[in-house]
Structures are given as structure tokens and as C-alpha cells.
Length: 97
Image (cartoon, rainbow, N blue to C red; front, side):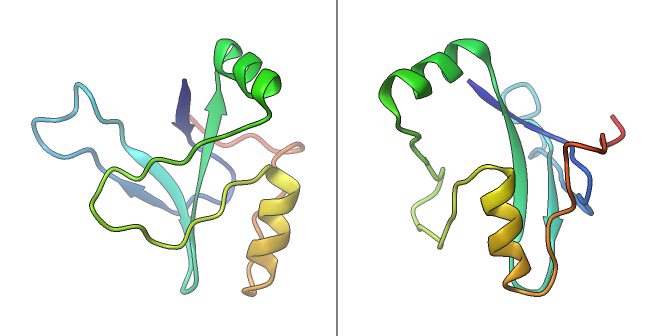
């Protein structure tokens, strides 16, 4: 399973809906005028499945599908830079808990 985590550059916290805190976590994001980026940490079993299949699925929990991008740190930094603000390098910095 993947879990949303805090990361360097995050500037907004979306709070879990009231009465859903036991099944929905807060979501830290980097929000600009052009995009919203979140960071997800993948557990060992899920990582093994991704490596085995070579696939990642995106499920949006609503009835509308907004434009989305799924990628690693380098490709995410590249696509966000296209809109004027790049995701800060994560490997050299750790976000506060």
C-alpha cells in the first residue's frame, strides 16, 4: 500500500473529513496556480508488486477524473518546472514530520 507523506515543498494540508479520520489521512501537497503535487511512500510488498508487474494504477475516489500525472521524483520535478515552479530536490532534504 502507498501512504501519502509530508515532503519538502509541501505548502498546504488537506484535512481528512470530519468523522472519517479513522480511514482517511490528511494530505500534504505543494499547491501552485497550475498544479497540486502530493508525495506517496510505497511499502515493501507494494513495491515488489510494482517491480513484478511494471504497472502502477491511479484510482480517483470521486465521480470525475481530473488530469493527473504519476511519476518519480525526477520526472515530477521536470513536469512541475514546465509550469514555473519545480518540486524541490527530495534526496538531499527531509521534510519535517
